[in-house]
Amino acid sequence: MMALLLALAAADLPTTPPSIDGLPLGGLPPQSLPARGCAAYLFSTGKTRTLVAMASAEAGALRIAVNGVPADLARSTQIGSAGYGFAATTTYQGAGMSATLDLAVQNRRDLTQGAVIDQGSLRLDRPGDDTIILPLAGLIGCATQTP
Image (cartoon, rainbow, N blue to C red):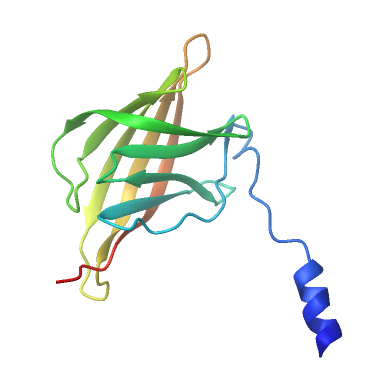
């Protein structure tokens, strides 16, 4: 039994892809639910399906990985309302780039403390590089509210 546990502990964990479908965007490792507020966990919908971005509503931040380097971008503008603290369109800036998220949020009775993002896109603009637009889908998860 102990040998089995040691073998499992030594096994390689799945790695995140450094590139999604040949793009400079890469996958993110698992992300934690925020202590307060809600977060959107956004997955690529193409050939390579992986966690590509996490947006935090309360912190106003977007985490992505570009060229294998994780980057946290700060929210700069918002247009419309998608629910759960997110706008329908949000622009984030930082690390020499800007990213725009477009989200369509759907409430479902079978989900508590969250919702489904059935359609979305991430637009990444970097000076001197091509603009990238990646279709996304995902889930919104919210921290447990305590009285």
